[in-house]
Length: 58
Image (tube, rainbow, N blue to C red):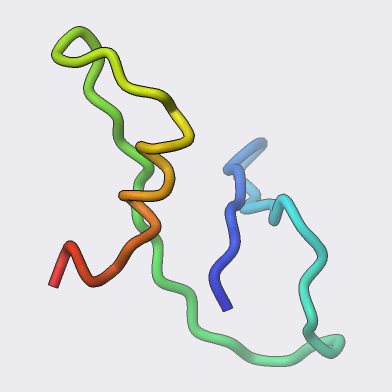
């Protein structure tokens, strides 16, 4: 399962509903969403598609 979340008030908050049972133990991998500014002018939707494609980062 891959989801987006926001870190606010020292709590990681998912931006969508999670299909998990109460008290279910899980592992979390955190990757920062980084975009360089001022280098290229690119449609943010394209940037998100590239960043979501794990095959490009193997």
